[in-house]
Image (cartoon, rainbow, N blue to C red; front, top):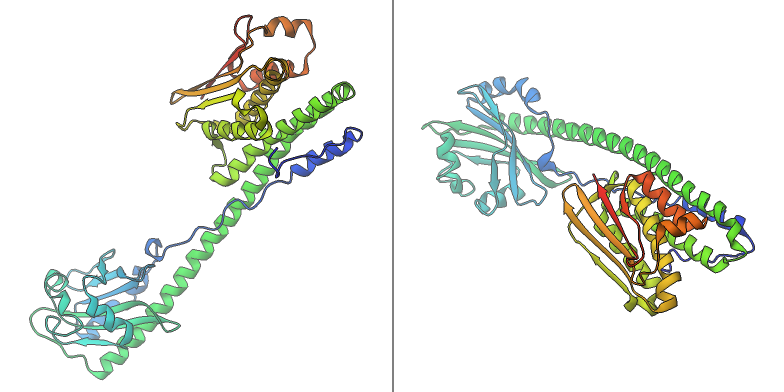
Length: 403
């Protein structure tokens, strides 16, 4: 067994085994780290804030356009979160400006307290806008106030004069613009903080619900294993090693389902192909000395099954595998095979068993009260799988799983 799951089982103390199973029920680790939230994708309710004073501000400064930009997470572009144009009274957003297109402008943004360009077409910090932005919005003069947090550039607030007549912004106008920019920055940070708090609260609630649900599933699934352990008590004196070996493999198949849930982030379904591949790897690892007698051909196409069906299937496959080892592979140097293929979007087929061809399931099931065969039959019926049992001349099981 893989070191992480290897169990040191004491045949004379069965209570310890049951206790160990219940300890495994607490197996769940952290489910998901909180997602990184990009400022570029945040919905910041800035327009209502601007509407309160932007019309008066535009009138006071005798300009037509005021807009606010934020620096993106990569710090190589700015994107608008609010653009106001007095000429049509409209608000818009989502325009992007990249540093590679206007490197001189970005250089000045990073070091200047304010950028004053009487003529946008000739100023050394803004001439790069001449052939695109300036023409598109008919901008002739601008006053740009960089927005900084803790000394680091966070964005810029722009005050733009349109038309043919340039404008020089006086000291009073500059002071007013800087104060307005600081007010805008404070509002942006507050809005971002509120949005982030809401997202964190939602994530926390989802995580708590998820942990409760997974705990519930783990306990339900391991209660099945506890039942198997209790049923197996009568066989311990006769077949200690076989019983404990079966317990180890059954526990692994169930633990692997929940480990895959945590790793994949899929909390309702798991990929059958990946799950069977992991079981195959564990079988190879546990029986390395006969790995050449174990053949697995598993379709790589994704096919998702419910958690309940995955657990049931894992127990069924494990039981068939152990029976094949006991009665064929280890006894007669036979071969165990497992072939899985995705037939369609709604159906997958698994064919598995040994090549000894001397086993008739129904005949043995009726004659003997076999725990292993009962597990296979009961779990197959419980999961609603279609199954063809082995007969003389073909020791293979065929299981059809439908969504």
